[in-house]
Image (cartoon, one colour):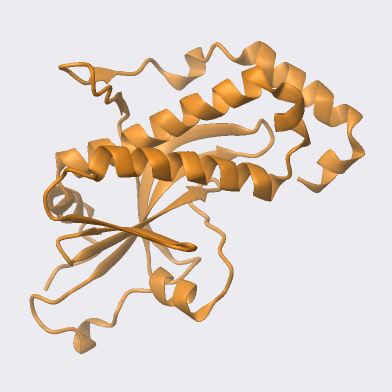
Length: 209
């Protein structure tokens, strides 16, 4: 029986390829979002919180599909609002933004609440355990910034068992070697963020974000 609290074992079973791909999908989505903010700052500033979240999620899932599509034992599910990565039938992963330190939001449907919880150990047969995980990124709403790539496990929406920051690399398909990214505090988008903040301060609707 797998101990879902054993983070090291879970990470080991997921494997480096999957973890690197999950992290790189955040790298790609962050790059896309910065490009969107820099190219269309007025549109980015006027977008609702939910609209921005959906935009980023679409880009995140795009990169997930591109990076995981050819990895063995990985099944990608894309059915309406349900998007999941299934690894070996044991791990199910959904992509979501995390509000610091590891809170996630979801519509309280029966399916969503079921995913947020883990099956009771006494009801699972040996070898048939299934672990539900949430991968994604930390979201800094005040600055509209995508933070670190993370992987979390919970047993209930607000009962976080552990959260793990995923080291990010730029998995450029045209490169032979994955290149570590510079620290996030070296972003070159400071002027873009300042412009976004000025635009929000002039827009009364921004108080709703």
